[in-house]
Image (cartoon, rainbow, N blue to C red; front, side, top):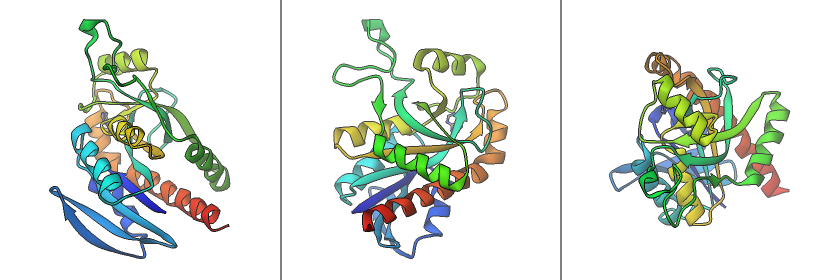
Length: 234
Ligand code: ADE
């Protein structure tokens, strides 16, 4: 069993690399992949760089070249649901591309022929996350994540994304990773910790909280890995 662990930015995978027992760096397609061991598990860790294109390339590489069997994504997101506060954890139930738009031809936002507006994440991994949350005594929200190639710092755009996709959080990589995993039939899990509220203060808040929120998400992901290992061994 080989696990892909992905983030989009260095801050998002740094806490993961620090917990690996050993790893080597493999460079491919202008990116670095860290192949290593976490306890009994083979893992490949990488940050893709920001956005849907880079995250598609990295997810595909992890599954096809490194032959990973499961993909786990960790990182930060902007809150859409007003109940979500900075540092809160959100597990994506399903993901959509909020900037995919051929509505002029009568299609819904986020849809192109041959695809679907939403891609659902793996229910077993989500169930495992609930068990981990219970054991840790932390609250983990489940919700819809909307992805696009824009850093959102506007109430108006946030409102559009909330209304159109019923999204709880937004970011810039989840849905593209979901599309890759779905196409290649690989179970995936997308975890985010809130860094900002995608409003006028988002840029400022993001800079202040990206590191701490990224660590909250990465630390939870490692606990999920522990739980996965326990279940694989038993
Ligand atoms: N990731 C974290 N905050 C974000 C925002 N406001 N827009 C897009 N991606 C984000």
